Amino acid sequence: MRFRAVVFDVDGTLLNTLDDLADSMNAVLAAMSFPQHATDDYRYFVGDGFVNLARRALPKGARDRGTVQECVTRVREEYRKNWKNKTRPYYGIPKVLNWLKDNGIQSAVLSNKDEEFTRTAVTTLLPHWNFVSIRGATDDLPLKPDPKAASLVAKELGRAPSKILYVGDTKTDMKTAVAAKMYPCGALWGFRTREELEKAGAKEVFEKPLDVIRFLEKK
Image (cartoon, rainbow, N blue to C red; front, side, top):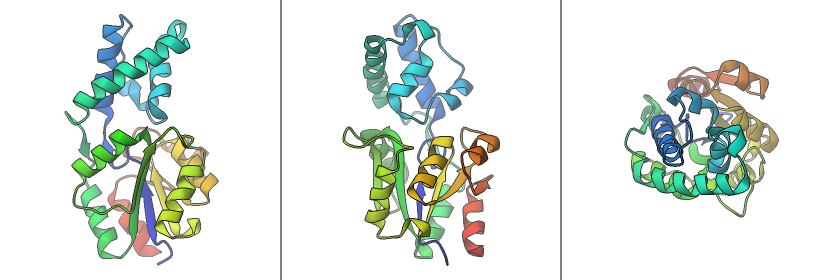
């Protein structure tokens, strides 16, 4: 088998986090007397960390540094209380993780979500699988699509990047995989479109999680 490890994004890939992220940000916007957004709008707001989420959700005239930072502080507090109200693994993800384990293929997690929330969400909602690495956003590493964190994950896996499948649902994920020389695969069950994923470099686009198994069986 060509690929010996799979790196997964979290939001929109392993876990459907959209409702809790949207609810948390909308609660903060309401408290700050700003307009709220439809949950579906957050498909294009999330994926690049809380600072970018705040910038995208705030009105254009309220994106100064101080307002953004206040919004980030508040949404972290709100999300800490509400992150698992509606968040669940996508249908098929447990079966994929079981198959990887049974076939000796390593799995890891790399997200732009704060590391605190990344680790908590993965270990709480996917407790039966031993991910070699679980990495979220930290102050000492740049966010994806910078490849530095992905390269560290490859080292932790002990695999050449060419032996690693990278599965994510946004252009940020695809650009990360390309820059880190991993094999970029789009998760169409997540938050973005096929067009976005392919334009950003996806070599495969999976419509549902079980397609990951079908792809690896052929390789």
